Every structure is written in structure tokens, then in C-alpha cells.
Length: 96
Image 1: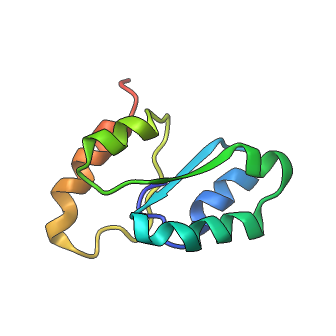
Image 2 (image 1 turned 120 degrees about the horizontal axis):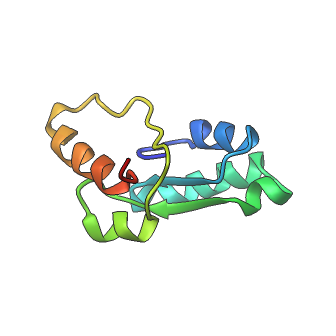
């Protein structure tokens, strides 16, 4: 999940059985990690990671790796970030 904020979407995906990498800006991670820890336990927590990811940062996107599906919710509210978001989505998606 990119731009996850609270992590609600990524946590929901984990509960439904997905292996999830939940991402956001570095300063959001402490609250995000807390939310993940409060809502997931055991195997669900074990298959969920929280990583820093600034849109447009190709090195950070490489660290996150490629995904079959990228989740994004409420990420288009600032038009000036759309090019960086698109670059990040392209970097994260597996070729098909």
C-alpha cells in the first residue's frame, strides 16, 4: 500500500490473507507501525511490513520490491504529486 496514512487498507488486506508492505513517509511510520501492531497479531503481523517510501524515490521503491497489486486510497488530493505517484506505481508493479 502506498501513502497508507493510518494503514487501514493494508491492515484489511492482511486480514484477508495478503502479504502486505505498507508504506508512507518516514515521519508517519511510528504511528503506522503502532496501528499495525494494534490490529495484527501472529501470522498476520508476520506477513506485514512497514517501510518508508517517498513517491518518486526509486531507491526506496527498489527496497520495497515489486508487487502483484498496489493499493492506494485517498492519494490524489495534491495534483503536484501525481507525477511522482505515477513513477512510484510503475516502479512497484511487476511487468505483465
